[in-house]
Length: 417
Image (cartoon, rainbow, N blue to C red; front, top):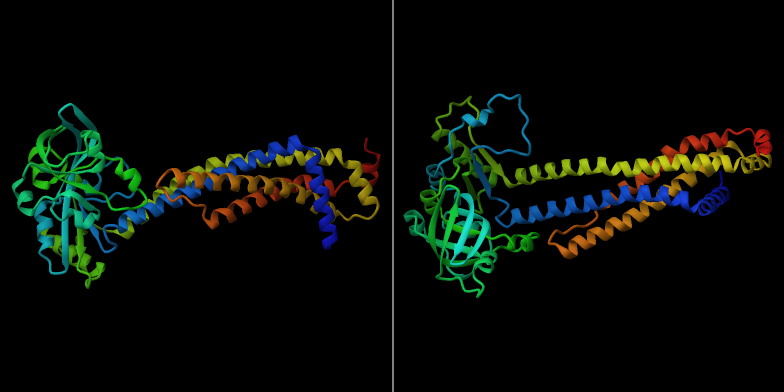
């Protein structure tokens, strides 16, 4: 088939679609809905993954975590007690031992509870009450915009002092003046009265706008431990090695130390987890990837609807144009030319739907990026996948009607009324 034949087939297909605007529009709508969902979800997933990566980078790529058990998503087991539940707790003494290693520059451990913070008549509920060490700000990033952080002496003494973020200041203090004020933090399993010594602003990242709306109360770890009944399983250690020490080397030293402290023999598996940032990000991407696949499955329903519409509209087109097909065959049109003509018509239907869906998905991504801190952007692979899906749907669902049209007997087709 030469270029002129293809051009003629394209023109005929376009005229046929224009002649059946309602049927074509419904088919295009089904395809565009599916493609829009795929494009929008791809943009959101990529934006969220990028935001999480930026947030993790705030604490330094070389930082890693020590915890009793790291769960990467949903765990499935046969009902028996998981191995990790028999592991020993990770304790403050473990963190202090890691701090004494020559390869380690900073160690910060933390735990938290969720509670209500009250100042006179004002109260803010669902506030994370984070107990940590004095060097938490250096690891987390950000800045102290008023006052100061608590000292190591205050941390060891369990002093009743607190650092609040700007969201908690807005919620508790209408005047905006929080420094030196007292507040009370209460939770299901404890409470304490505290004095505010500092106001903290989170490090900028993709989720800063969302994060700044989340109130935070940061207190010395010993203060949290004395006044709240915290879950030991939530205890975690953040470790940052010196710049001239690789993450792998520092992790090996920490693992060797923890194995020694837990009296593990050479053949015993670790009864703790040491997690680099890359694994955290990988696990998060696996979670968002699974969510994306589920959304793809749901969005494919739109493509299936569009595909069924392609079969319907093409079968009707074959029936309505039976005499036309007979005339074309009578004047020399080959079976392959008829087949290509109807395939082009089917692909054109789904391609138009894909283009509309891509534009709508791009618009949703731009809207999300403009109205939220998520850097949503449509990735190139999503565009290629949408176009491929559109062409595949058109060819796959339009093939049978096209074959049927190409196999019509010209004599019978000319007699068709």
